[in-house]
Amino acid sequence: MKIYIIGTGVDGAKTLTREAAKAIESADVLIGARRMLEPFSALEKPVFEEYRSTEICRYLMENSYETAAVLMSGDCGFFSGARKLSESLADHETEMICGISSPVYFFSKLGKDWSDCFFVSLHGKSANAARAVSSHKKTFFLLGGDLTAGELCRRLCDYGMGEVTVHIGADLGYSSEKIISGRAEEFTETDISQLSVLLAENPEYERALLSGIPDEKFIRGNVPMTKSEVRAVAVAGLDIGETDVCWDIGGGTGSVSVEMAIRCGSGRVYSVEKNTEAVSLIAENRRRFRCDNIEIVEGEASEAVRKLPSPDCVFIGGSGGKLKDIVKAAAEKNSNIRLTVTAVSIETLAGATAVFDEIGFEAEISQIAVTRTRKIGNHTMMSAENPVFIIKRKLK
Image: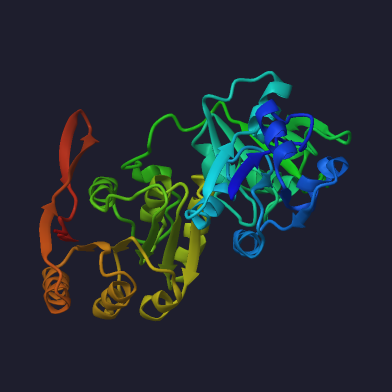
């Protein structure tokens, strides 16, 4: 059986390529969601209304066709189920035929270039919308999940980006197509179609990866904070990836959580803190630095971490005397975690190394001693901060 996996464009007919039309016309059966099949009802071919890969594979195995065409929305290479389907059909001869994706169509309608755009799919899921818009000049959202266009605009407003320009497109390619443009704050109550996309343009986006953010940039309160230089070294040493899941144990003001979140823009940071004032500060700094990928977990860390998803990276700045329990819980979820603990006292250093030894982690220990200048009259004096030990798990 020859199976074509076809991107049908935004509307399933008008934006169909000639190659795709020829494959559809020659196929013995058409498979896809109802919206994909409707434009080809005049062909009077057998159809199977289904979009789930497992069911499509089952149907094809149970029926003997020479050729079949599976119709996908947009393009097979843009947030499509085509890849999963192709993997499931590895034992069959398959051919993918590209289509016109929604951003290609939408950008052409707007008369804009999309080569410098960041793409986010919200199909069936939420995402780090504020972080994405904050760190990119152009961000394209494929909507249809937990965030509608109106909710997405409200999210941007909540994180101080109500002035960002947004373009919303609904029912692209259909007779009911609608495109509106303006500031995010103007569309917080829009009830535009679920079948929509949104482009956010932020000329004030972060042009560099923020690292070692100055202490005075954070809202401080009366909560201890990991200082800028120590934070920069500790976070850099965790080698945080774009999609990583991170734990910040003893979140404090949220300074480490923020720098983690900036690095894992498509990931998640769980900031665990038991102090009520600190929890409020984390929330304030989360908003200040537009990090909607930080999830605040209030409670005792040794208990809270048991309910958290498996981490890629763990930073422990405060353990409440439960360091062993926290590290063991993290290691049970992921034996390959990247782990860093900070200590300001000899006793904490000794306790951390003992925990590493007991669990079987090799410790790599360094000390940072920061001295800053301050003006006294006409003189510039040196003022030393407390030295900090950084205990990092050494991975082979």
